Length: 165
Image 1 (tube, rainbow, N blue to C red):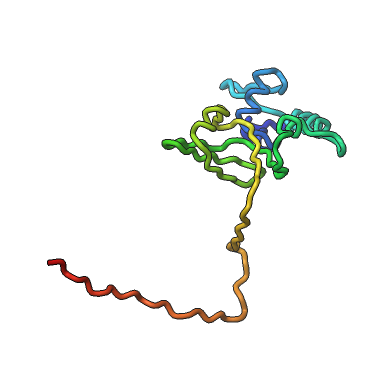
Image 2 (spheres, rainbow, N blue to C red; image 1 turned 60 degrees about the vertical axis):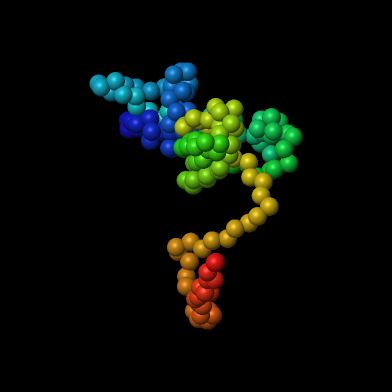
């Protein structure tokens, strides 16, 4: 029987490390301990939890609980993830979420972070309502086959300053 570390098990389950630790404290996850006292999770337990997660997902036509608590919002682009980092500096805060294998960074007010009590490892929901779309090229993008001519850069020359008398 192969055993996984708590961090590796959390990654396979797609939940935050702190979430899995909380489940362990609550008795929702069966673990075994090493001689050093560290928790380990078996593959069978991972499969049990994945099956349980699959049965808890809403079927088409049913409402997600997040939809009911956020019913007043018009934004429909909602990404479930967990807080990877919170930085507060003055009036603003930078919050980085891990959504799947991707990072999403939001700049919000420091008051909002305090009101939401956001901490690293917490489950969170990114709600995207945007009036702008930005496009970028990945490093894997192929270069163009046709050359595009660009106008030469012109240098600004400083105009002579007048002396005040």
